[in-house]
Length: 136
Image 1 (cartoon, rainbow, N blue to C red):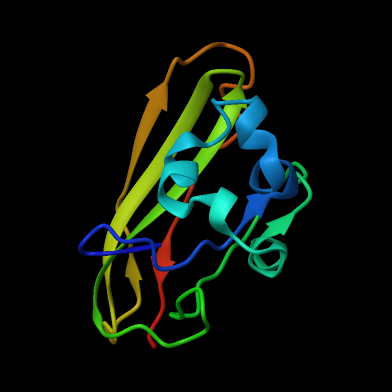
Image 2 (image 1 turned 45 degrees about the vertical axis):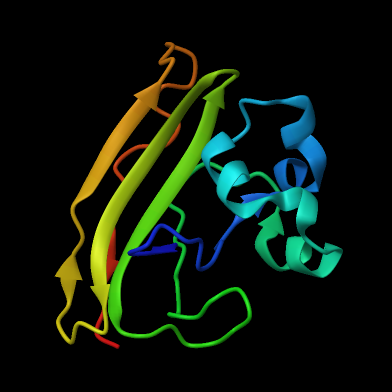
């Protein structure tokens, strides 16, 4: 999650492998997030708060509660979300969308998709992404 100035507000999830140093060995492991989050500067507690095993297949649900990395509520305003995945070596995908936090209506957030170095291997690994903003 980013604010409207492009500053990282919160990471919801990344794999333990990537955050705990995998990005050093695999430069193609979610490089957009690595450049924003600077995992090399994170404490082990910060890393533990956002990491887990590689997700299994199927429907996955991630939620943001409107708080920043320190647990503080963010102000009403415009935010951007990014979902980045490394699909196969240098092949990756980024989904992005913009919404207004504090909007009192249930809305579907339009999502753009960008593919990088698209290859047939795992090209359908992250698909049919849907983002909703619920009343807060």
